[in-house]
Length: 280
Image (cartoon, rainbow, N blue to C red; front, top):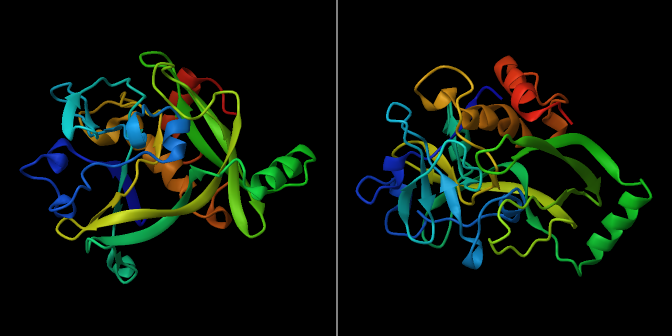
């Protein structure tokens, strides 16, 4: 786990003048939410476009997010939780992973690395009935892995929710109920229903100039940018700690996943207990 870290895009990396090479000549500066990002509170509108958080300028106390539909940067708030998270993957040594690159129709290099629940299964699919039935009679096999998600209304204390991963017929699935932040935001998901998501490989866009991998989709929402320790850099924020404690671990396949989600960061553990209540 020490061979990579996660962050989010900087404001200048989505600027029209200085954006990353991987965005040039294409529409990839915009991105769509995965179903999980919507279920965890990501604000959506037509075609599941939304907003995703950018790195803050903590010295100026400025917080930014990308308006995907209109391709411009807005000034936000440290406690906004309706923006989605589009992680950026940085390998300490990416040489071993470059051999696995593949190219799409736009000749953009991509990599599949890690896995995460992303899209909801069709209600009419036979697999959904089978999963529900086995969940009810408690015969569905758990992998031992739990995914960690933040949620909460803007400018109010947030909480943590866990999604349990199950194994069935050679694939992994997670049941989840929608978290609704803003009832006025149109969403195809109802807050009282259980939805099944399949755990799938994450696709990353590779930027050769910076040696960074940018998530093709916005994967999750609900994470703010509040400080959890003193500092004026991104590494001191709640977002960074979430990405590199919870999400970094949750991306690893279940057979490599540790059992405790809060072991690695004592500062985050104290922060979670103080602000979000007890684990579970």
